[in-house]
Amino acid sequence: MADKEKRGKKIKKKLLHKYRLVVLNEATFEERFSFKLNRLNVFVFSTIFAVFMIAITTILIAFTPLREYIPGYSSTSLKKQAVELTFKTDSLQQALNVNGQYIASIKKVLTGDVKTVDFNRDSILEAAQIETEGIDFTPSRQDSILRELVSQEDKYNPLTENEELNFVLFPPVNGSISEDYNPEAGHFAVDVVTGKDSPVKAAADGTVIFAEWTADTGYVIAVTHANNLVSIYKHNASLNKEQGALVKAGEVIATAGNSGVLTTGPHLHFELWSNGYPIDPTNLIDFN
Image (cartoon, rainbow, N blue to C red; front, side, top):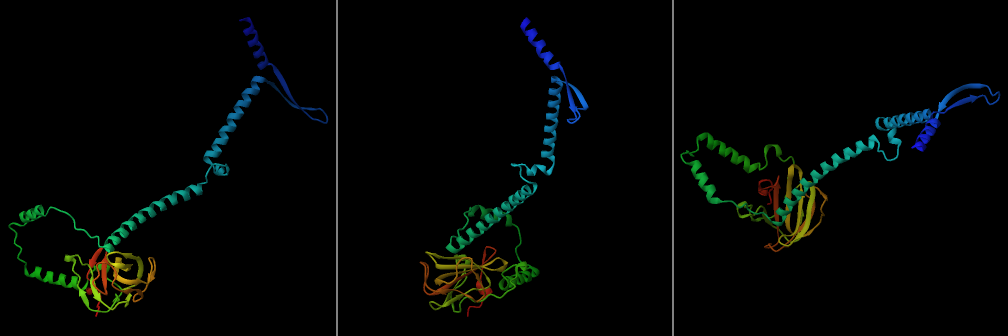
């Protein structure tokens, strides 16, 4: 116990033992100033100075642009660019998803994979019969006039008012129509009889979105035009354009033929689609 007390007193004496720090003129040995110090004061002052320097350094790094010069810290401009690129990437991903769905629907049209929706016909007919009981369906004079007006507009303008074509459609081939447009029978096109290897021309300016061989319809080429209009040409003998090519109205894009399993002779199977819905090409094009 006595040894511990002696050791403690000795340490205390060393910490509190006073020293004098004197600054002299080296040439004249004149005393300029002096400080009375002990080891405890030096330790406390050094600790406070270190904490102060750490705090100042932390503030400079956290709240000033100086941190950009420290390795490992990214600059503000780089963070801003990263955020902008993140938003752009998200927008591009959404656009790719929409385009993917659009291309998938086009492929279904090209391959003829158009399926009817399954539904319970009896329940629908029963509900319709209940809802229509007691209603007079005799058309009035005003209703008859309106129906006739709408019928004429649909006949000569298959597109909506906001989507009227501002260009003329060019007949892809000239010839007689062997099979008319008949959506009830699943024939969303007109079949135009033409000679083998006759030139097939683009109906309007556009971009080729499909140009491949299919087992059922042979060589098929599809072109997208303005106003979300798509023209499709099937049963060709060969294709003159590749996917992604830009074409002009009347430019030769293929040669007519008799390719594919579903063909019945040299002819052109020509389809027109507006916003994903088929329209009768004869409403817009004279093939004779």
